[in-house]
Length: 124
Image 1 (cartoon, rainbow, N blue to C red):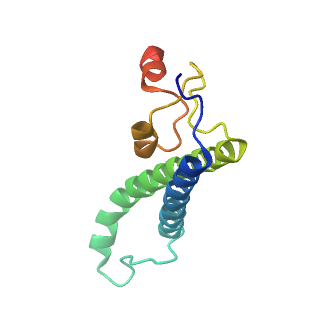
Image 2: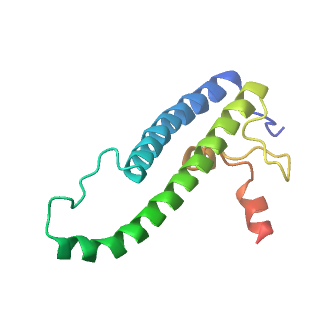
């Protein structure tokens, strides 16, 4: 008989993995936010005006990129928090399309996954 859900010890293992990733993700997000708000500004205020002008164009792009990274990081954090909720509900690791158990290897690689590889591929 095929296993329908992970047992408590397996869920605890995933919980620890996710909490570690969540902690790292929050640190990364804080770093991105700090860079965006120039808290730890290593700018060019004390360098020559010509260098400052050259940097202004690239600064806009890097701010935009950092902003996009921060948004992606926020989404990643939400997905990880949702995974912790599924662990609490004991529904973690069950594919939302097929209802089958998502293999441990996939969950270790993508701990917030809600789809099996088959269901993900079927989405195209």
